[in-house]
Length: 55
Image 1 (cartoon, one colour):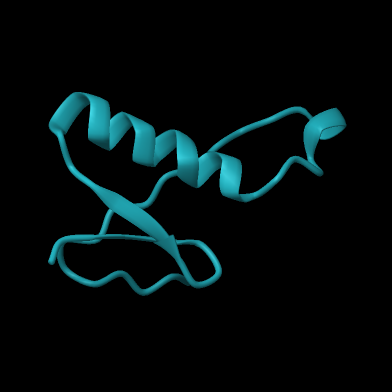
Image 2: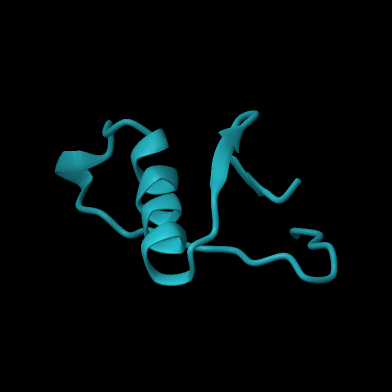
């Protein structure tokens, strides 16, 4: 089970087994790039795999 706070959004990336050792920050960087280019939202990677935005 996964508990999610109100307003939380989860993403799943599916990749082939041959690429399972890719840098885990790559997925976060893809999301950050999309947020900035599409919505002008600045953010950063924090902790193990959190994306943080705002003041």
